[in-house]
Image (tube, rainbow, N blue to C red; front, side, top):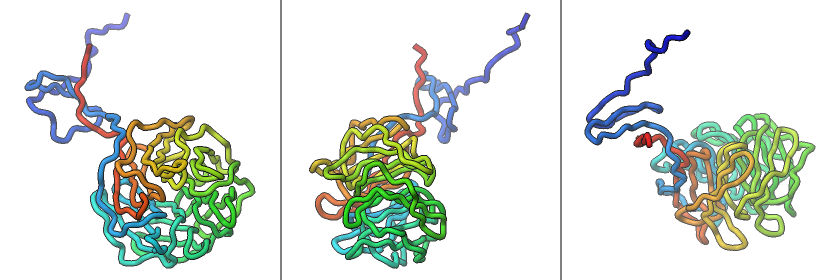
Length: 323
């Protein structure tokens, strides 16, 4: 027979005030408020104001996290290569700009190892540039010049899809750190002004414009595109963040109002968030994850500097109820 008399759990700390720096999963009893408390993730799902860009622009691109993002390119009204760095509080102008100023391009990577490709100068461009955290270097161009495309992945392993040449296209290109390869598999639906999330081998493409705003979503497994459940709000000129199974979509234009609508993707379907961006906008830049996203720039209808920070979940002190 098993003896249970010697088995006991860990004692719960009794304190008169909540710990200043608790760790995730920590539990304590506050003797002042007579409450059992813990430190755990709380679902927030809300946007809050961040530091404003120095240069207002639409058609802007960006890569990184909520606290370490690089924003580049865009137009206001002419195409620019202006580059700014975000530290979670404020944007700083980078001393050097892109070699080819452009709007409506795409990007991949991080704040200190980014890739910017394609877009619009006075014509569509295939120009590709690599960013090391301070300077841009021109590298091999894409095979198909285009604007309004989607991009995901890393500086050394990126994926480009869709866009507009002389018509909307579905073609896909893969970047290996040195050159672009046109892949045999194209998207199921040609479109431009779409957004993406994920990696070179596990990507997600959503929204865009076909003959009207669309919510079409496709999943990429490294070799083929598969149509999956569409977004709840059809839109184009939107932004995206996150991964193939945890995506975030926000902003854009929806037949035809400019919107701040925000949706989350769980790998199967999209869920509309009750509140969207405080400033509805299109041609918006996006970075981060499904739980910690960043939205910046865009237009409504003129170019904006506004930045907003998305918190999906956050660690916070919670009261534990036993009833």
